[in-house]
Image 1 (cartoon, one colour):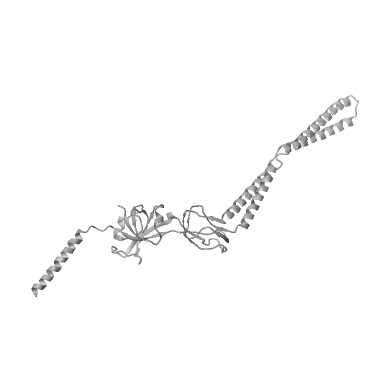
Image 2 (cartoon, rainbow, N blue to C red):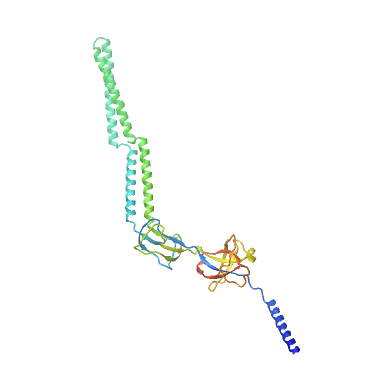
Length: 325
């Protein structure tokens, strides 16, 4: 009986030694961390309240930057834009009128009138000079000379008025302060038109980036408040991988480091670059299981693949992340 027990014990020892030898001969399994694919969705809605009239995309569609997403009723905004454009045109016309000199015919008439008044003034001056000499000789009464002096002063005043009128016709019809005020009106109307055009453009929403339509949350005919989500867009550059690293492996990874991503449908050469390392640890999420994890405290790490490779990944997909060799 003792001999049989001895044989059993010896056999167990041999099996144990063989197992240890086999384990020591096995290559080290590659370091890997468990994680999943996540994404930052772009939720797009109107900037103004209004009626949704059309939806140009559906869930699953792929769109490019600038593609039409949806439209709102724009009748009021179009009318406001047209009114602002008309007001601006009127303000500009008024400014041009203030800055423009009189017509050529009016200028020619004013010049002819000035020439006639100057000739009359010169004639009166000559008559006054002659009558002054005659008065000194006693051939003309003093009253005639005094009347001539008054006529000359009146004629000179008329000439000065005609000169001022001609200068006015040759220059802008408005005063400088009136022109400056009208220029301010033009700028004000231009700003009003810009605002009206912006409000009109906001009624027709386009994709801010290319990507896949993840969901639509409204249908034509619905009244929407400003900011109400209508389309959820997923640009490929917004797809990233989240994985969790235990404290024992934290020193192996840093921001900017290249890592490889493995999943059931991923290409073997799929890579990403670490973009974020959480500043503090957290408890292992219950959805993450790893036989290599020895600690309940892990660090959240994020890595972003190239935009050309990101569409291969689907949000929620489990992955294994390893340091790139």
